[in-house]
Image 1 (tube, rainbow, N blue to C red):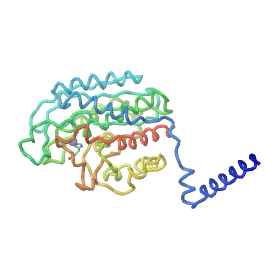
Image 2 (tube, rainbow, N blue to C red):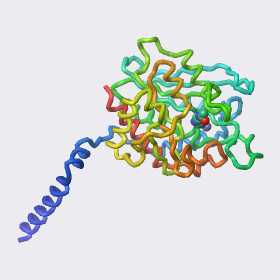
Image 3 (cartoon, rainbow, N blue to C red):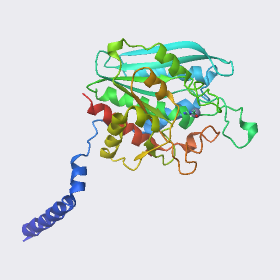
Image 4 (spheres, helix red, strand yellow):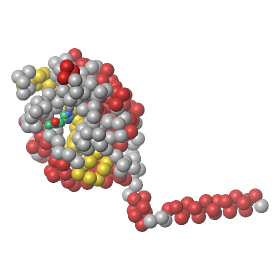
Length: 326
Ligand code: AHN
Ligand code: ZN
């Protein structure tokens, strides 16, 4: 009797399970396209990576925090077992005449692989909180938890995952400097000075360039949504498709919105000029500002406004894109 009861209970479960599985054709497709992550991106680790950077203070070229952070980035990449770390040190001149000691730092995974993907984020932070309402704060450097810290924090966690489980392709993780020393009244070439230097001194032979690049910028905002950034959509729609489709398959379709977003002058513009198609994952349609996150270039860009879920959605998606390549 007991056995029959258990059997009938099991049968009921089976029927429920089966009927749940055969809802609509569309859901069936969604289910079959679901992605099993090959490595688990740890949001707490990513968050800690952001905090470590913020604890150095502002990472403005020339400041102490910048120096300390460069050493940290190099040692973390080495700790995660990358094949080589390339440091590209130079001095560039900012729009206001300031001489900036900069360092573009790149770790290469599967150095010999011909098929490669470039993942990048800027690691410097803005010397001015010039989006503050109170003008007296405009000359204070920001902590850049989101703007600077978040992209790097995610990429370091990706480096850790890629050591745990090797990808089939080569991956270059690049931290570019002096993105954020630009003239706020000027959309042109005063921004992204590190990347502008990098493309003029590409550390690749022409046949060994990465097939494409993904830039992460301001990926840690509270409840962040990522729309298809306009320049990315224009220059590399198939890569945008790939990343946004992977996000849906990974369960982050609520974070990666399949709609066109704002148009941003950011490091990806210059990477594209360097002959590597590159997209930007960036919050451009925040509901409060209809642009960047409200903390952008303010003193509120600190750890209290970093969202682990946003780091996770971006990190796991990009990681799954990498594991899907061969
Ligand atoms: C401009 O405002 C022209 N570009 C913004 C790019 C940026 C600044 N990303 C982070 N901080
Ligand atoms: Zn900025």
